[in-house]
Length: 73
Image 1: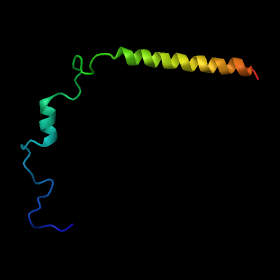
Image 2: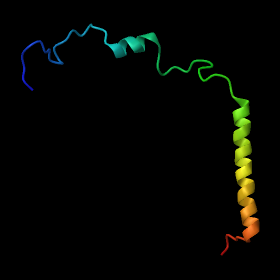
Image 3: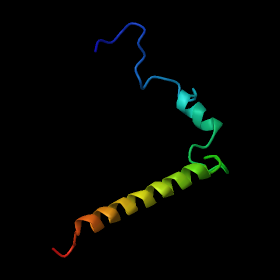
Image 4: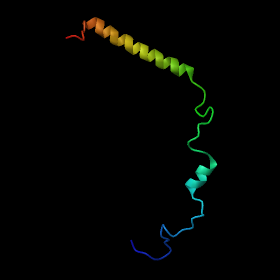
C-alpha cells in the first residue's frame, strides 16, 4: 500500500477520541441481565411445543408397537 496523501495511519490517531463501539458500550452494559429483557413467556407456544413432543413420542411408540421392533435384536 502506498503511503501519502490524506491517509492517516491506524496508529496515528487521538486516543481520547470516542469511537462508535465505545459510544455504544457507554449507552448500556452489553452483558447486564435486565429484568424482563426477554419479555413475557408465550404460554401458547410452550404448550404447542410440549404437545408436539408428546405427539412425536406417541408416533414413535406406535411404530414400535406396529412393527414389533425390539432393541435386543
